[in-house]
Length: 420
Ligand code: F0G
Image 1: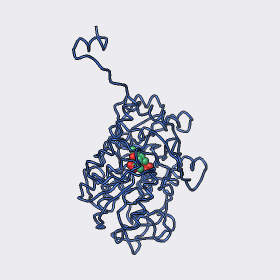
Image 2: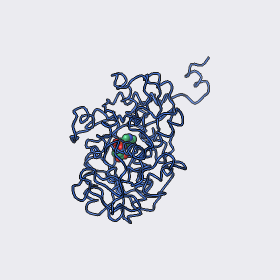
Image 3: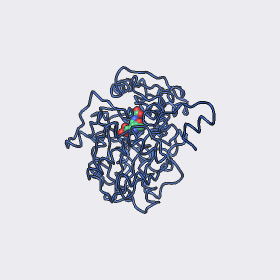
């Protein structure tokens, strides 16, 4: 199965373990899944994917949450808190305002540590146990570190996280700290932190649990399965489009992989696959640049800045998996400025859905594409919101109204609120 949307399932190669193996998306090199620790191809350093001889159909899924999709994962169960089974909110006023036929919000902020990273970690930490590695590590704009710390703690393993100093939202650092990760603040941006963690991993010092690790994306693939099942249960069809924020493009790659597997299993036609639509902050938009220029490679941005610190990333490592996903599904990518992100955060909050800034980028992007006529009025759309409002309390305070001081009496309160 190549990266093409209509590629058939493959026969298991000799290196496969129970129908599961690792394959390089660049040179096709195949490797046993759990014999050795590797994150990229031994031969050409390309990105690896987990491959299965028997991709599942919807009938193979049972139970709830990420492990409902065990038939599409390398194990039956993982280190679980548990995760997945997140709400697919209706937002009727926002839908009317944006002007699409249907709009639902898949709120991944409702996972145990408040972001979609938990779906990746339940699988990734399970694999780490299988491999018998010691210290787990990641570079992070915050959410990955919170999830790694929690799942590492749950699995009884040591965790090390590298964060860009001064650029990580307060809630995320608090989580990593309380779940007992060792936190190193690096004088550099996220991409610099990831370079260092990759070096440490290559030297055998740590097991890397960023989305460069192909097993992380297996867990995140379940977002796609859940959206398709829930949408079909409610409307009898799949959504036309899924709009999501993009940082390292892990989710974009993971959703594309979910769709490819369902197509290979005969559970879905290629023309039923939702258009993957990525949104980046204007100050950190290398994927958008590549899509707009029709480029096959993404140029690394050394200077990045945005209020949406979770996606303050200039070198999306999963771009070689994500670019074909966006193109083959008929999707696109768009950049939004910080003001539009904050406005979308308020829009969602007014519907009772509390998200962090990076998450709101999906809604800001949809609004922009609808205004430009790229998204049609008759489309059924799902926006992915990736992290909870409380992850970044400072951004929430800035986006919301100010508390009003009042004297300590009922009369003073009545007078203040202008009651009769
Ligand atoms: N939204 C949130 C809230 C995130 O935390 C991230 C990534 C993304 C979107 C982008 O997802 O990388 O799959 O395209 N956060 C990482 C971290 C980098 O370290 O927490 P992607």
